[in-house]
Length: 75
Image 1: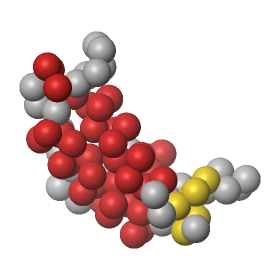
Image 2: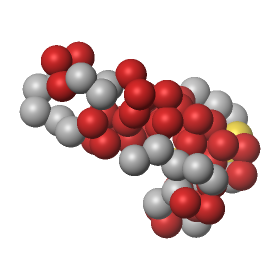
Image 3: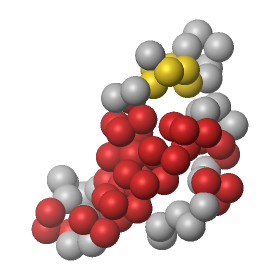
């Protein structure tokens, strides 16, 4: 299910990731959701949602890293 707004993101994202990173997450998730609609393009038995979350976290990790405080910070 694509996210319409960052307020719809999972708690783990909203509570620990800066707003800009939340926007990156949302856009990457929504893009991957569309791209991986066909099970044949996904790896193994992962669901469409699992694939989209992996892509979204990967996009966030390009500009942010998780600190010792458990929150994500710009690099």
